[in-house]
Length: 171
Image 1 (cartoon, rainbow, N blue to C red):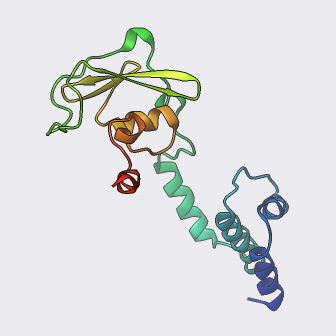
Image 2: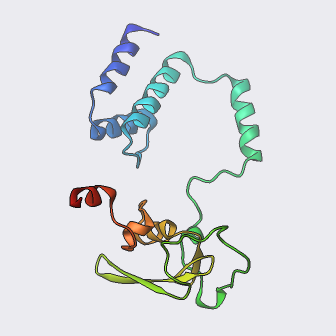
Image 3: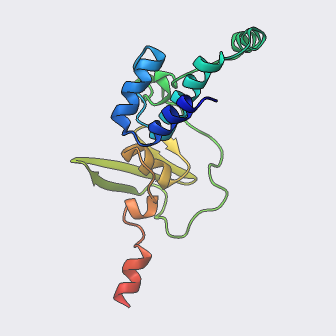
């Protein structure tokens, strides 16, 4: 590796994400949607090295193309993965969803409500799980994740448990 290449790669470490995205577009000839700084630095450094040292051999390129033809490669999950099922396509799940029932949960049939971002969300407690918007979930945390898009403790989200640090403060 030449000193110029070392210096160019070193400069990447000090760049902001916006600068890295611009540099990525220069080096690859197309923009990127990534805002992951570490990934951008590594990809740009790899490309700079490949340009200077010649990249992959022809044999390696052929092998990669061969492997690529055999693989089912997806860059994003299909649209239907996160979509709600069509109204007539609801199915009833049979069998147990959970091996043991948590004593902190209300009786099956109870409807839990939670207001989140201006909308009321209703979850029905089932004997072995939970039902939310026609879908069955194994845990309240999974329901909370479906509602918020981020990881939550389901018991805290629905007000069935209190935070430990709040309990310790009241003692």
